[in-house]
Image 1 (cartoon, rainbow, N blue to C red):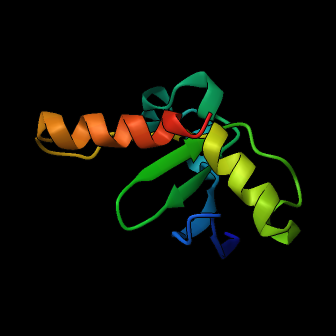
Image 2: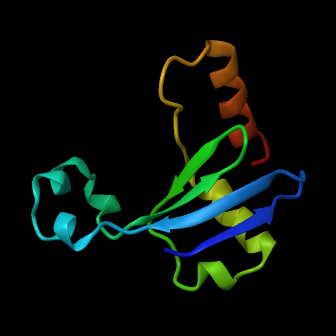
Image 3: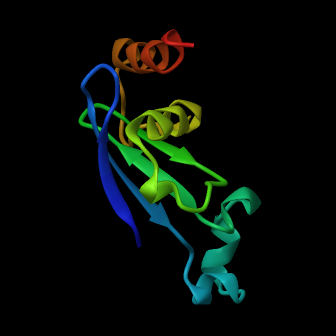
Length: 102
């Protein structure tokens, strides 16, 4: 698993790491059936203090790219809803932040 940290133009710090399903999952275990097909080859997980995102597929050599490139990947990544009950105002703010810079 590769991991790195970068800062976006707003100064927000993001941790990024790759998640690749194990051979057990790839070889047909019951756990494989829980993964959507687009995630079979793995994904990048982007995490900041206030949100989490997932990107699939992801480019080879991502861990060596500059912060600007990582920010572009992060912006194109899917926002992951927090587990548990989110208040509507908080969820609306996250969606607005995710799409506001477009």
